[in-house]
Image (cartoon, rainbow, N blue to C red):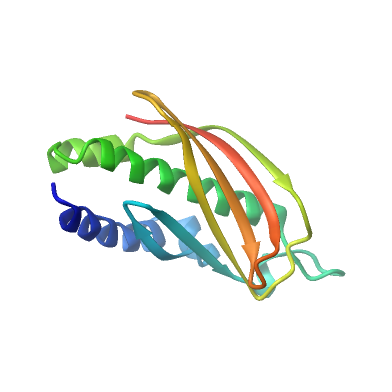
Length: 154
């Protein structure tokens, strides 16, 4: 599969990630960009995502969900890059079998902002395990949280 076909595949995954996973849809998780190089995930602040009403900050569970989701997408991107010559059925099966097996979130600052962006990179991609590092920043680029996650792949 050439780069253009891979990019089209990533674009076709966006609505699956955003609309077919009920919890992502409920939270309002959106993919700003996705390519062979990575992903930028966005969530807009809403009243029902506040964890501390006195300080008006994003709930820690929402933060961990965004970082977990971002890490999973990063693992998918790298799996697809490694398997670009595989059949669509094999690719779909491999992606469907991805799941989180460990996650650590470090909350650096309170989640204040009108929106938040998550990015990251792969630390290791093996035959059965992927490890990612993710970051969440607010609308001013201030680092809110970082995560290291391990996923079962394949």
